[in-house]
Image (cartoon, rainbow, N blue to C red; front, side):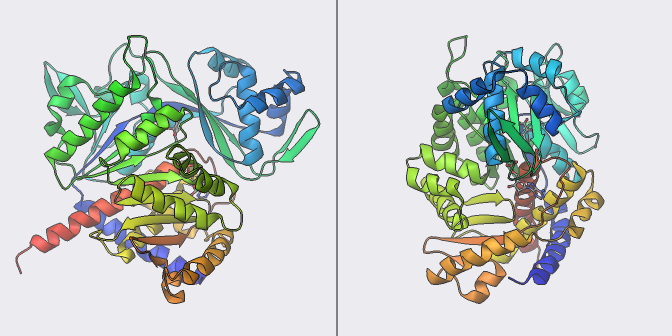
Amino acid sequence: MDIHEWEQRHIEAFYNVKETIPYLDGMFVAYNSNIDAIKHFAEADLSKLIGLFKETEIMERIETYPREIKDPIDFMARLLISMREGKAAEIPTYNSDIHEWLKEHLGFDYAHMGGQAGIISNLLSSLRLKKVVVYVPWLSQEQAKYFVDTDNLWHPKVENGKVCLKHPPEAFKPKIESKVNWILEYSKNLNVSCDGKNFKVPRDNRLIISSHPKWLRLDMEREIYEQLNSIFPIDGAMLSGYQLITEKYEDGSTYQDHVARSVQVIEKLKSLNPELRIHVELTSIQNRVIRKAILTEIVAKHVHSLGLDTVEIANALNVLGHEELSYSVIMKEEYGITSIYQGAVQLLKDLSLERVHVHSLGFYICILVKDHPLTLKEHRDFLLFSSTLAAAQAIRGNIGNFMEAEVGLEVPISSDGIEGLENFKIYCVGRKLCTLEEFESGYLYGPDHDAVIIPTKIVNKPKATVGIGDVISAGTFAAMVSKIKQKKIINSLPV
Ligand code: AMP
Ligand code: GLC
């Protein structure tokens, strides 16, 4: 692949998308926002924590692969697993003990907007979409301060039974606590040594300890649901946070109740604008029952678009009964991209989606149904645009406007990404998914789907990795929805 050509394509795509964004009337974003307490690990922090335990105990706990943090050793075990593999994970905790323990023994460097919906709505407002309506069922006064202060960002609020749109600082619910997650960021090459085992961390990544306080409900207030028309006009919805659904609640309700209500919201949104596109952003979901329910009951048949990373692809395939494919995605060897591509195609089919967007370190793939209304070149522009956003986010930790996003254009395309794609090229051309020239453009033509693949920019020493995936998915999806809108407006103009 010609790296210079791809650099040029990044520049063109950035300005193409910048022009189309104003066509979008509005985006709805729900449900999860929280405060992220971010800590960057130094070797000294890690050895101090390890020193608090018997090292054999940590190693034994690693073998049990805890899917929930019940005590500090569960935490240490999942931290070392995440560091050993360089793989992000989000592990729930259902009481505040670990929060107190981390505050006492580690502390954090800074607090930031967290949660996919929080990160996405801040980004889209900063990119000056006409209107962003965010909905967080547990918007506390403190949490509201983490939203950007722009005139285009709104949150629904019930006043005397009527729903009106307010800026987040005027829409919070009084007497609500804030949800705080711990983000443990670590860097490539960090040396880890525990119980005689030594390894180097293979890539920058993080472990998230996600708090699930008892009062947390992924739900929509009845009045807001009934008057959902008050948030319109909107052209797209980006939904996330379903991982916070729990199997059973103290009040006797179950995940099925919350899943059913989530679907009702989606269906109502679509009934209010049949052309509305819905995107679900997936994240690490430890509970397999919930993971399966989200995929088969919320995503399948109800939404158009899915965004996820490679670990999430493997996890999704696993609960959908594709263990072998799931395993080969996780193995990530030379043929890693091939498995990721096959896995994403499988998800498109199994879940009846219009598009599946996978982001990985060095490349993105987007699988599309054959009859998608936009061209592959347009889809390629959306991916390239978000590669620039991701680079800007990695450098700055935050994107406040288009000028700050432009900084991403200066980041070079990853040579590892290009190399990985060269291997994938052999598979694609051999399977007649494309000609060599088509591959150079990033276009694949499968029997029942099309696909776009791009090499991406990578920042060497990112400020933080948390939230970059959300930025990628939000940038691409917003770009796509605005293009659909732009074409509709242009086509309806009198000739
Ligand atoms: P997620 O795991 O969903 O948060 O997504 C993380 C994504 O962010 C990866 O798949 C990469 O595409 C992107 N990313 C991570 N680190 C960097 C970096 N240093 N520079 C640019 N993009 C990055
Ligand atoms: C999840 C986490 C949140 C983090 C976000 C980043 O939503 O719960 O803490 O900010 O992912 O993608």
